[in-house]
Amino acid sequence: MNNNYLTPKEIANKWVEIGKQKANYSFTTVILLSIMGGFFIALGGHGYLVVSQTLGNIDVGLAKFMGAAVFPVGLMLVVIGGGELYTGNALISTAWAQGEVKLPSYIKNLILVYLANLIGALLLVAMLYKSGLYTGHLAEKTIAIAEGKVSLSFDAAIIRGILCNVLVAGAVYIQVASKDLIGKIFAMWFPVMLFVLSGYEHSVANMFFIPLGKFLGGNFTWSEAILHNFIPVTIGNLIGGGLFIGIVYWAVYVRGKK
Image 1: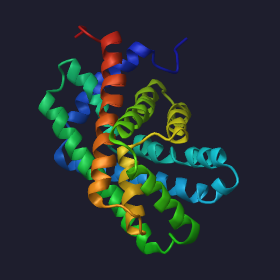
Image 2 (image 1 turned 180 degrees about the vertical axis):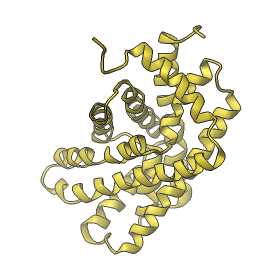
Image 3 (image 1 turned 120 degrees about the vertical axis):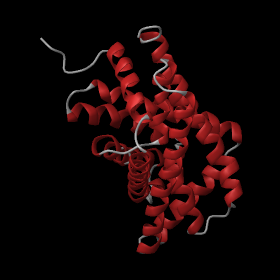
Image 4 (image 1 turned 90 degrees about the vertical axis):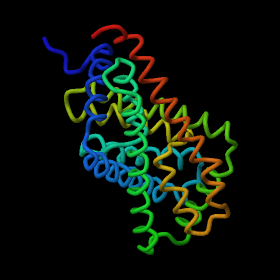
């Protein structure tokens, strides 16, 4: 009887193949899929804001959970529909560690994906800002979230970035285990829900939350946003996905096997 899922060893070996494929995408493919990736994650962020905007007045935990329940739709769109994310592509580290991808190619891919994710996220920011939807409680919620993210210390932002991508890259990593669509959805929903509920930091999601909060009147500067959030969270996400997930599972299940 055949299993309808891959074993941990099979997942790790599969990610060596996937990482090699991602690193060899054409420039146009990387840019287009990454713009879509940033746009999709931003859509998940919009859903989070809408559903949680006033629930905090009733129960903070419930507000976080309801927002966390909606946000994973963004990652589902990326993985199932097609998209590239900086946080997920940190997992190319598995193929790099196995010698299937050169370090410059890995770094180049991460930089291109990151910048194109930013374009996609900012595209939705511009659309929503002009849509007239962000008024009243929704605008207040967005500003509060953006200001809270920018107020983090450097160390706290790195740690939250690491913990975030242990879960988000972990979700992207384990979803390949399933051979059916429902299995992939559940494999992604639970870890991503937990990341949002826990208050961790996702660099691509922050490309949506922070600029939108700033445009709506957030009391912080762009330099503060970059230094206090984007840089440390980006570093933390790479460590969480590339090292804690990609390298660890490569070392356990793949190392030395060609």
